[in-house]
Structure formats: C-alpha cells, structure tokens
Length: 249
View 1 (cartoon, rainbow, N blue to C red):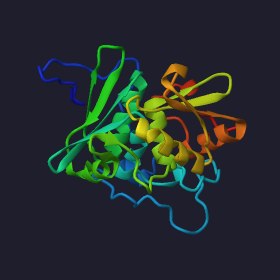
View 2 (spheres, rainbow, N blue to C red):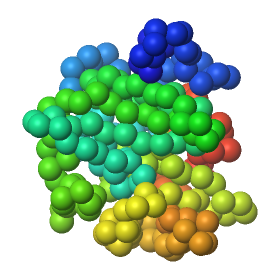
View 3 (cartoon, rainbow, N blue to C red):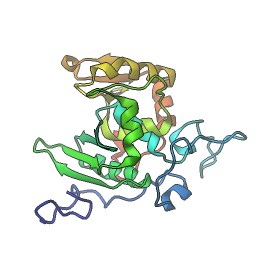
View 4 (cartoon, rainbow, N blue to C red):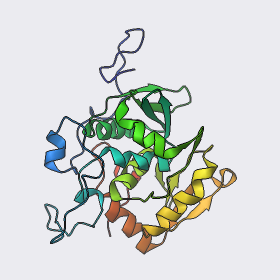
C-alpha cells in the first residue's frame, strides 16, 4: 500500500496506529529536510576543519549520523541487516521487514529524506514490509551487493553513523541489562562475517549469535561500545520509543 494509504484495491489503510504521521527526522541537517531530490552518494562526507557541534554544543562524532547529510549510499546500512535488494532491468528495489509500527514510520521518513518513495503493508505475522519503488537510483547499490542471487557486502563496505542508524531503526533491539542486538538477514550467511568486520572497524566489535541463540545478529556489549553506538547513531527518531534507542552516557 502506498503512503497515501491506498492499497491495490483502493481501500483506505493508514500507517500503523499509535504513532504520529511520518515526519523528517529532526536530527537530520536542515538543508536535507528541505531537499526534495536525491542526494548524490558520497556528498555527506564532512569537510575538513573544526568538528561540528549540535544545538547543545556537543562535539559531533566524525562520520556520526548527526555530522553528515543523508545520501542514498546510507541505505547500505539496511542491507547490512535484514534488508534485501532486487534488480529489474536497469532498476532496483530495496525492501525490509520490520517487527514494530514505529520502525515503519522511521524508515518511510528516512527514505523520503533521500528522495525515494516508499510503500508498506502488513505481512500477517505482526510484521510489516517496507519497500521502495523500482528506481534507477538504487541500481548501483544492487550491483555492489548482489552476487547472483546472494547478498554480500562489497570489499569497500564500511559502516558510518547514518548507515548504522538505518540498520538500528530497522532491526536493532535492546538486550537488558546492558546490550544491544543488531539483527541480520536469516538467509544472508555470506554477509554475516564481512558485516561483523565492518562493525569491529567502527569500534563496535560484537558477538555473532546464530538463529538458535536468538539471532542471527551481532550483540554489542560493554559500556564503551554502547556509548560508541549511541554517539554514532545520534538521538532517537521522533517515532521511536525511548527504551528502543541507545542513549549517550
């Protein structure tokens, strides 16, 4: 069903209830919230010079979510998790299944920030499928990640704050008393180890949990690593429950 709430049959269907309508993420830079077109991949790399600060005067983490503008390349964060991409001719479509209504709102808003139309529908198992339209804009992402029908990160893959933010919004869950689980795609075994190396390179070395251990996913533990995660992904989106998002110490 489309964002206007109309499915293929024309019956009105609102976005998942109990949360406000999707709005641009307040943590995104102001120019990105006003922009209606697609940002060119790579344009979000911070320039050299003094480190930027947020409205509270805190120094922003280099490559953190709050220090860079949204780009289509950020969507690699969804593919690091359970996101999937498929090609059709010269176009591609990205999709991901999520387990909570708030995730739908956040992802729809994040995709809109990058100039991508999105739709969603319930899957019948208390989950929701969020997907983009087929578009040429996503073809480079598909080419980089697809090897036949298998999904695998390219050799140059790395995790930035905005990529981690999207991964966490789609499939990150807190694990009391002190941990966070970043879930992976169940059928994406070829991706698990390369993604783990990218996490370690970002200062977030985690423990890989298999499907029989509550995964697949990487469990992030330790005060320093959790603080690093919170710094990289930035503050919680408007629709996210406070307890579902890592907090800065």
